[in-house]
Length: 347
Image (cartoon, rainbow, N blue to C red):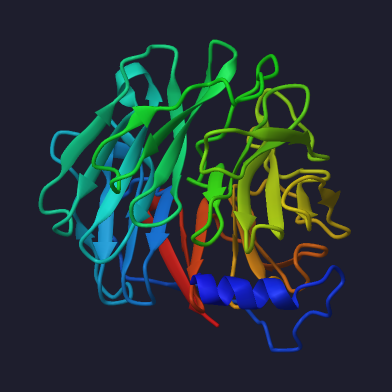
């Protein structure tokens, strides 16, 4: 979203605004066979033509023709890594995050469409486990680790992921006992537009919580959410259309067919959350706004996909196939999941 679009939306938004009457009939269409069987949890479309995806067994994929063909472009000798998050800037430049304990957490960057990669970060703290990352613009970004020494850890870059440093933790609230983030779709940590706001979501502890930073990850405030938490339950994915309008989805990965109170929305930047009046009712691992406003969004999970036309107050099922991640750019949404599957819709 450009700064001008963000300002225009912000100027026109009020709580309770009437949803657009524009037709919204989402339907996934399969892209070409990607040629891999990896589970693709990382997804980063750049346009209706260019998209990147990443996942298990070191898989990194790229298309430049709208999904009619895919190229396997991952770093060599990384088949033992799980690339759970990818952030692409264009057809040539992308940053990927491998998740896991200790040195399994790594970051790589390419500037030639995946022909070559540079490892720009390798975690050496055996207590850290990086889950997801997000960028504010093409230079500044952050990555999130599960708690180290009782606090979540933030890694930051100011040169597009070419180098990284661990932020001081004095601005981070204490974590709850057992609290962590979910590396399910690369969206446990998100930003909004080209501003300074970032949010990350948690589970595992007594409450599923949302942390919010207004200074690009230096300091954070935290609030409880109404989404249930547990050993494998909580908020799996966040999306913010503006610094005020947010969505949260989740549930319990171990019980995917049932997710009471598994979706919520915020209209005050994540300070408070309200459970959707009609919820997907099942575990959802990814959610994304369609960047044409604040009303329309897609949520996905292993049991199906849902859409909202009213900013998350109500959700309607439109597909029953399995997906892990969803991302939208302009008026095109992309989804990815198990067995190398990538789908697409244009609205």
